[in-house]
Amino acid sequence: MLGTGHIFNTMADLSIQIKNIQEKLQQLLKQQVLLQKENQQLRKEIVSLQERNAEKQSLLQELQNQLDAAKLGGASLGETEKAALEKRIDGYLKEIDKCLALLNT
Image (cartoon, rainbow, N blue to C red; front, side, top):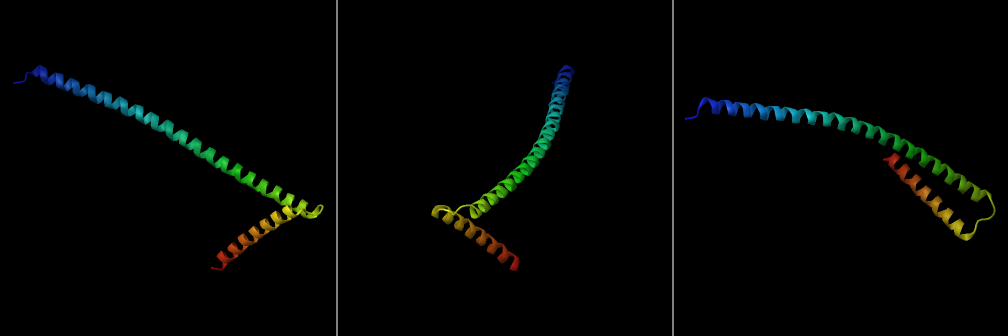
């Protein structure tokens, strides 16, 4: 038979294990809070970078339009430049046609 001393040792071991589990749980909860804060910060950074990217894309498009206008308004274009410009215009027209087709559906 088991003595009373053995039962107390088992209960003491259980108490120590429960305490260890509680400490680990507290550490995990603290880590979760830190990760949530980091995640929130990273999400804000993503939004900021997306906004900056949109601004840069808009600026790039504006500069490209200005370049195209300068080419059209400037001296006569070479055959290569003219072909490239016609290709871009054709691309724009195709995009416009696609948009119109989507609007009509």
